[in-house]
Image 1 (tube, rainbow, N blue to C red):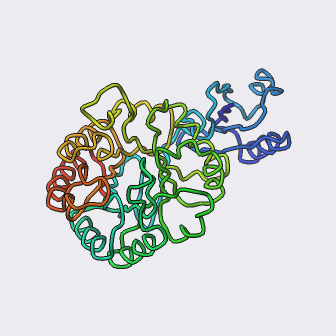
Image 2: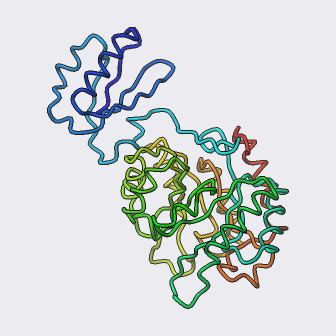
Length: 337
């Protein structure tokens, strides 16, 4: 349920009304806009009578929300969410680029890529320490050693780091990671999502290969229901009948997610097509579609990469792409950070 309070209501009247909702065992989210105050009421609201609520001196209007996701719903939270990370902002009006190798392979490899992407304008360093692979015989990542190498690269460059978690049992290892990524395969790992809801770290949640947007937002809801509102949505392509591409990038998801939710939306064009020459065109489409950022795979030697070399840009290609990204982001009136 959403309750809009009158702008003329006094602070004391508003406080009393909010406390009356909490006394019923309901959770109240307060969202203050420039012209109104919107209360998101979470819990069993079936016993609340709309006519009685509307008769209250503090209330302007009341609306029931039919969608199953509440905390992630824009109608509960009309203003865009901005997530602050080490002096950088992810959200509407800003544009963030997360770049780095699919997997951390060595200190030399990661350091070279980290310095290159920072020089080109990336604001965050990504790298897979744990790698969920389709085949059990494929490279699974350096695991704990990979996280330590990411932390070294963070110290070297000052870039906040993003890496993927596989299990709720690994949370202690991610204590110094700046953004925890939940991969497409784990989008509906509800035990993991619940645990991430109890931490305050930003969570980059990737859409599953065959999940609807509502299912995507319901996974975000699991995290937010635990108290962690720092969720970044990442569209990375969905599986269709097309065989020429690894996945189909759903550009239409950007404006639709922004209509449905207040959470930031970024695009991963590398995993979408799985083809390096398609990364730049898809990145341009993402900017035009209103995305809040990009996640790009960059490797110092893609042909020798232990994981996903076919979709990785080399540092020169990434630098060329970033020059175009900067021009387009500036044209859109956003700040690259």
